[in-house]
Structure formats: C-alpha cells, structure tokens
Image (cartoon, rainbow, N blue to C red; front, side, top):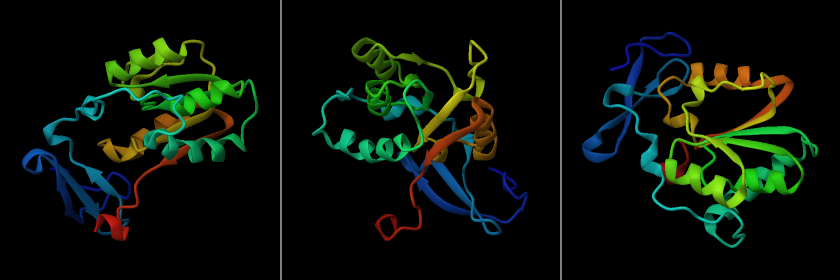
Length: 187
C-alpha cells in the first residue's frame, strides 16, 4: 500500500476505488490535495487494454470519433513540420491525423499488437517501451506530447509529468486527458 501522497506528501490517503479481477487494482485519494493514486502493489500490465486493432482511417468508428476532437484542439497550437510524440498511441488515430496535416509524428505503445499495426498500416515509428525510459535518439525534443487516458494508469503521476516535461522543447505543449472521476456517470 502507498503510505503517502506523491504530490503533497500527506499521509491522509483513503481507499477510493477498486477495479479489475477481485478488486486487484486499488486507487487511493489524498484527503489533502485530492490526487488519486494507483497502488502498484499488484503490478501494472498496460498491454491488457489492447484486444483488437481499429483502423485509424475509419472516420465512422466510435473510437476514432472520440479522438478527433482532441486532435482538432491540439492542431490550433501546431504547424506543419512540428514534432509530435503520443504516449500510449493506441491505434494511432491522432498521429494519423497529424501526419496527414504535415507534422512529424512518433508514438510510444506498450501493446505489441497496436505498435506493429500502426507501423505497418501508417508507416509511423512507434516504440514499444515504457515512456519513463524513452530516450529521444537524436536528442531533439518534441513540440507537443500527447497523453490521453494514460496518466491515471501510472503509479507515480508526478514522476510521469516530469518525464513528459523533459520530452518537450522549450515552449512546447502537452495535451493531457484524464477521466473526470467525480462525474455523475462514474458515481
């Protein structure tokens, strides 16, 4: 069990939610700053989220329709030729849209199925590594780093945000999306 908040250091953590097989994954919420933290005690297998590959070019598929507004938002801040890295790129939909608009794109994906499918179909470089150990081979940083629905699965979100910041060039932007855990839909 996690003993203190990774953000503010408070010892006031309370059990918040359990999920997975027999409550295997436990989430704790800090009573001081409200950060929700995944307890890494039972391991973290992110590859479990990929069971099928959905064609990123299929504009009508629900999975792609949910990603398109995120890209439209991000696009307002970028120009052709800029470098984008997506952490947890899934089926590559956002990278596909950005590449189509003339941006240089790269992904990180833990699922071998998704990584290979994106590379084969789209010709996009996708690394099958933990982004916390990701090294920009050419030491150039990215104009934008995308992390959609990844942060909430990581055991140390503060460390993860520092890693994202280290990947950005000065003045670069990060698009981070997380679920609203206080929404009435999740209650």
